[in-house]
Image 1: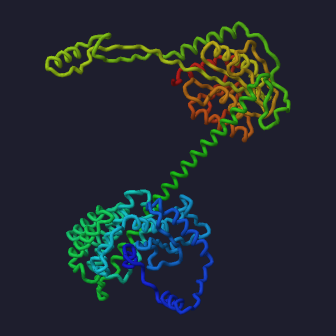
Image 2: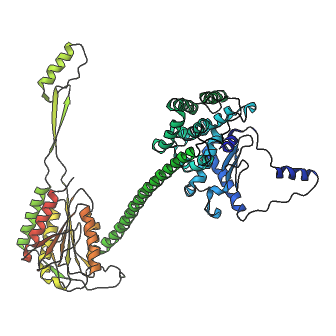
Image 3: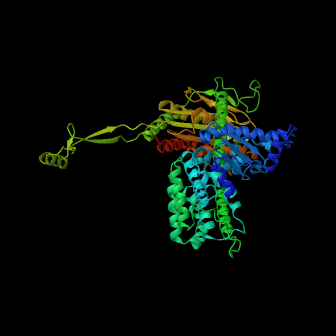
Length: 604
């Protein structure tokens, strides 16, 4: 970790390598410098580095830093920032196993595909922004230099998260790269190394990068080596460092000296060298490995939870989009079904194709039907009636009813010389409650097996439509087989009873329900809503499945669904309330009673 730490605050660029020095000598002598042979993906890594340079200002606010991405860095660390030259390097290996051609950091969100590499980038960005102090040149390589670098690691991340808390997940993803590689099975378990591990891991816990449960193992191990008092002293030092300014070199060096003194190390002495003869080795690496394991497990669990939430949101969005599309299709069906002229509409067929209408003619309503319509209208008005609501308000002055207890309290307040707050007058206002409207849709099966239902349903359709016209209600009736035909339309008061026959084939019940639901608003709250289906239920499986979905959707929207059957052994679809009528003439009364009940249960 020492090489990795030192490059963050070093005042000068790293020394030239032997090969670089020889190349410069050769150039001075007039020789030609061979161009380095580019790798197969060198162009992509140059592009990635340029894209990271474009993204860096949003992390740092700096526009002077150049990011390069290539295999290896000059310092040997996975990532490095050189403050004197404003260079930031990232090892291309951090992006493995992704193909560089697929890496596009310029696209916001692409970083989620390589969180480890982006975490290293964020870490170096934190140093580029907040590591504005430097160890004096005379102290480089000393124990106080190393202590200051350890404290700066968590201090820079703490300051960065104060500005960009959302980057925490990336710093956590790269914790193994930043820490674990500095501890091996050969790392001795001495006080300096234990403090070093605490300064890298436990300090990050207090900086908000790691969670307390993730660092328990290391804290136990370090406490056993340092003792609780010394660990508490070191904790106080890194906590104070977290609140030190970015350019406060003097205070940071004081923290570093306090660190060395707490460990009994001479601050200006060379950095302590691990004793290779130490009998206990690898204990710190094992404890840190468990920390990394806990972090990975927690991040995996968090990612799984986020994926579930995202999937649920996507499912809701898809369901909403599907519902909106279905509503648009239903509106188109309703427009065609209830268009003036009463022509049959066949779903999925061209509009210009003619089909025989089940309507056979009209007749004037009988006196009994007129009386039934009047009775139903009165029943609907009674069901829609809501008691007036009483709203009582209190005031300090009339008008209203005098409350003696409040009046005495007001007199007492005045006698005591305080501002009166009592309200001795009460006023009650009775306000009428809005009456909910009624929406009734009737779908009658006119396939060949339903001939006995045509006459009573025709009568019931007129009765309900007439009663709806006499109240604040709407009603519509459609006949369906393979096609859909309007018998009565929403908002139109029929003057005559429309008669129809049952000689068709097929069942377009799902489309019939869509037409009634869109035309009447059966899925909308604020009204008493009722869907009546008159059928024996003898449908093909695909017809039954589509219709059952529509019924379920209406029931979820709190719309009552009544299934009228006139023959034995009916097969109603799930979600509908079955009512078997031995006498078809009872249909009008049954529909009226169901409509009244739906209106009484309606919420305004």
